[in-house]
Length: 115
Figure 1 (cartoon, rainbow, N blue to C red):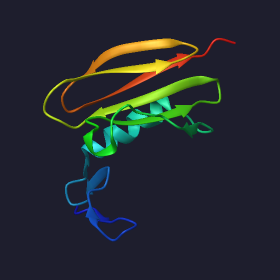
Figure 2 (figure 1 turned 30 degrees about the vertical axis):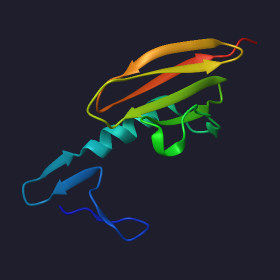
Figure 3 (figure 1 turned 135 degrees about the vertical axis):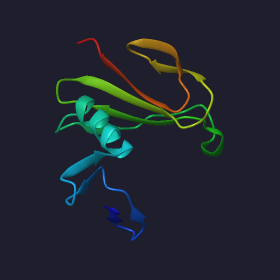
């Protein structure tokens, strides 16, 4: 019911908490974040470099990029702030995507490079 320590010995929630006395389980927010990544980034995907035009301390979004085994590129954008933030993802071979990351949201972008 309390979660447990992580690899650096900090107490954290578990993605699923089980209450054996009531025969219930509770899906925590981390469960949905893990599910989001699992849905779009299958086994065999490789994390790839993603460059940003902001200095590390001034970046307002958290991002990760992956290349899936089927050739699809994946960019995950996390906005943990309380306001929407506009941004652009650019790829020299594919073009640009302009969008806005909604406040306190995670979103994923997928595209295939031309063969």
